[in-house]
Length: 119
Image (cartoon, rainbow, N blue to C red; front, side, top):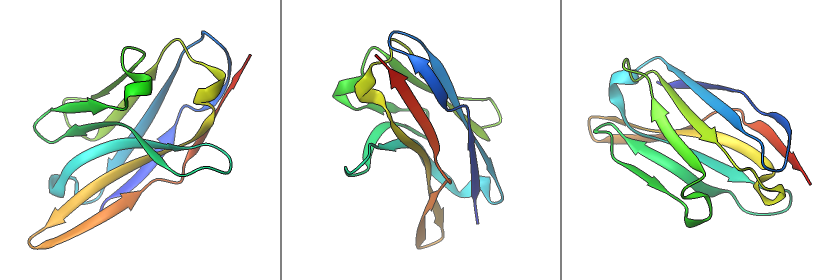
């Protein structure tokens, strides 16, 4: 199976930037989509951005124009570049991979990384 390790979270002032990284290992050839989700305190976990194995991306409306999801050529690391950060972007950010192995599908989650945006 796929394993995910995130890095890059931290504390930043409003208007600043951060880049999150998610390194995948294991059965990476089975990955069909990778994505970033976030979960603010006391709220549900929501999709932020996703990229398919074919390179198609999609974003939550609240981050369009500010966040960019990308990956390296080997397709083993996915990045989330976050610009013009706002206090409401504060959350734990989770990397997610959808792994497909034959007829079986798996949802793989990273451990999460905290992003805090101060006003």
